[in-house]
Image 1 (spheres, rainbow, N blue to C red):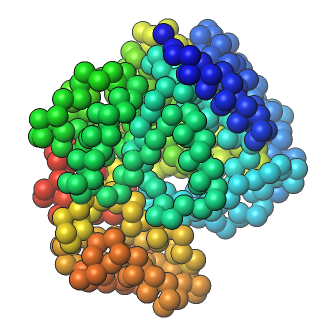
Image 2 (image 1 turned 90 degrees about the vertical axis):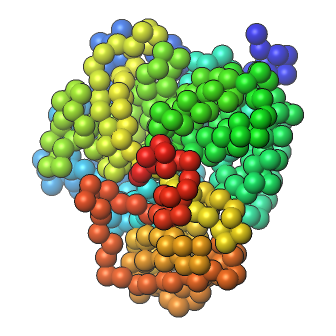
Length: 461
């Protein structure tokens, strides 16, 4: 039963927050909670209708797709699934090349995002209100599957900037009202792990949210210290952004005394799939089409692994159509025991992020280093390899706007994180090739490969 404060937060405070931002999140969530039970045929028909409307919109208002439809001789008013199949895959290089021509002529307010992505290739893209409303509503719907809601006490183990901007301070105020508290995932020193364990014990959150590797590390630390966290009322631990491995799930579930709900998505591709209590990763099919394709771009069959390709129909202001995620997954045609008819992503063989180790032994999330590189001008690709406590190597593929002062910035920022005595070697290279698997690893620590508990989970992007 929800507390009075939770009802206030989820029924009044958060809806007011979304209304001020002119998002239709509340109406969208209610709609999603109805459509998740529709017969499969009805849900598929609604998806095709939405997809066709999406194509008509971008075909008339987005220069890149207007030209593409014309060049291919495709009528966006035709059968939506045939139109989809006729379109080429969208890649990060294509988005970088045609960025301005991907913005709709009638776009509303847009927010600029800059992400390194799992491949280490920085990407600038934009989100409008419709995309934000969908992503928040889809996550909210999935949260409620587990008997928790906005306003229930929550601890979030996530990336956090060193210095807070005014917008971040406003977000802090909002999170405080909604009883959501942040624990930075970048610095996992023994002292910080002690503090995180004590915070969890004292706050007694209803839910946890974070990287699976970080939550597993905290859980392992608590277990080794003999701290009991399985009886404090945690109902669910939500994990995302990395592949969840069985050992991590067992550790988190055992120590915190709760089920683990996996989620799959990315800032660029959106919140794609969420795990239900029956154990299925359900795709948010009302606004997202997920395909899996072979190396030659042809569609895989159900049960066959392929690269996950996403079309997000709430991105008409800056379209993501058949967007290559770089992750490998498997689609299923079964119906989940929970009764929801949303399509199922049976398996995600995706990427994860390694930890790196500072000179003083502090364990940090690899994103602590990536943030520096992904925001620098001229960086096209990068790879970070921590060879030892004393040496970290950085390979950079950069254009003419990447200069020596940017090299100095990398060195300074990395030393601030890893230690002033650490040698940071930055090498400009003509290209960075994928591994034999065809995937990229954008951060690797040879130290954590030998000593990190996450390596027992085969944490591999």
